[in-house]
Amino acid sequence: MKLNNLLYALALVLCFTSCGTITKDQSFSAGRISLEMNMDDLVCLGETEISAEYNTVLGVFTKLERINGEAYNPGEPKKKLNIPGQKFTLNGTGMELAAYKLAEEFPQAVYFQIVYESTVKDRMFLGSVTKKTAKVRAYRLK
Image (cartoon, helix red, strand yellow):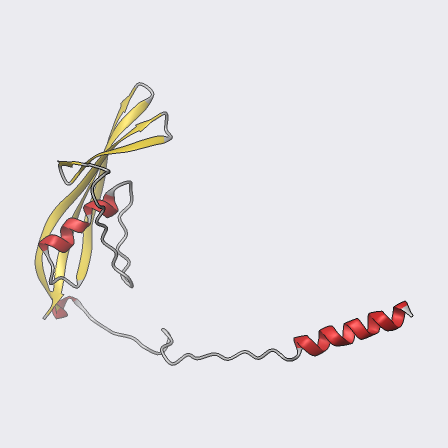
C-alpha cells in the first residue's frame, strides 16, 4: 500500500513538473547590437576636479566632512550621479555624492572619463583623515 502511494505521488510530481514552459525573448540582446565610436565622434566640454574628505575612527566609523570643498551636511537632500551603461566608477566614500557636480557643470555631456584619482590619508591616533580627489573630463557627441 505504501509503495502504491509512493508511486502515485511520484507520478503526480512528474506530471506537474512536465507542464512548465520556458520562453526567451532576445530581441535586444547585447550580442547583436553594437555601437562603435571613437574620440573623433566626441567633443570635449572641459574637465573638473571633484573631491570628498572624510574621517575614520577605529577603522570602522566613517564621517563625511567635505564634498567638493564645501562642508557636508547629512540633513540636506542627497544628490548622486548614476550613469547607467557606462563604466564610470569612482572609488571611495562620498565620491558618488561629489560626482553630482559633473551633472551641474556639464548638463549636455553624454560621456565622462576619469583622468586620474588620488588619495591622501593623514594617520592620527585611533583614526585617519582621508581626502580623495578625481579629475574628470566631460564629452558630448558632435
